[in-house]
Length: 251
Ligand SMILES: NC(=O)c1ccc[n+]([C@@H]2O[C@H](COP(=O)([O-])OP(=O)(O)OC[C@H]3O[C@@H](n4cnc5c(N)ncnc54)[C@H](OP(=O)(O)O)[C@@H]3O)[C@@H](O)[C@H]2O)c1
Image (tube, rainbow, N blue to C red):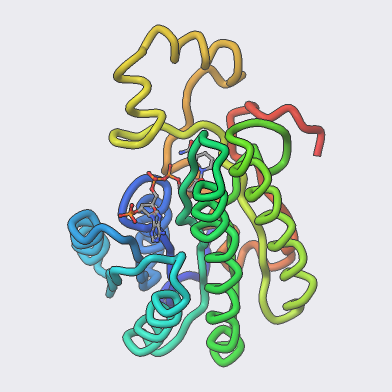
């Protein structure tokens, strides 16, 4: 299947590691130029080099998506470098189990407000380009109950924001969300728990994930790359579970 992504230009927030890195690499493997952002510089530069090694132009921008000025600069630098913007993946986001105002603020700003701001900044450039696909990375715990309370509520709001923007921006720009289940990689939260407590994680998988294993970041990326592509031309306002059967919701 030809995805039609060659020479398009994308932004993946939080693209330096984990799921965001795999999404950026997946887009680059299809010939798409990719800008990534993160707060930490070293992994950002390493992933930028990996993207270039795939033969596409790549840009790493140190930016905190919780800061309005950083979001503006990320979009401006991307358009200045690539001359266009076709794709935005709102992947960055933090979570914590504590139920404090600080955690609510940080979770809201790095997930929901960041996605809303980045979308707002990207839309005029997508309209100018004549192509637009936006994907929010939510969670199965935005579709149903589970996870830390602030994360649960804010991921649900991200799915709602993607749906609302899909209606607002149709027919020019498509907006969807992807809801990953538990996805493990070295250095990620599940990867760390796998190292610290392999037996506990074996029991967790047995009880919760019908496919019998954690997801891999590339498996989330495959779904996101498809939604970004021309092959998903009639999909907008959807939320796609990628979770090995982990979620229990019928919808
Ligand atoms: N892994 C899972 O099991 C899972 C399941 C469901 C949903 N998700 C969602 O999938 C997304 C990615 O998860 P992940 O597990 O790959 O996360 P991760 O390992 O924590 O990576 C997050 C990425 O986002 C960047 N980031 C975090 N806060 C940022 C900020 N304020 N501004 C800019 N960049 C920021 C990080 O770099 P810096 O720290 O250097 O900024 C990193 O590149 C998140 O939205 C998460 O909620 C993950």
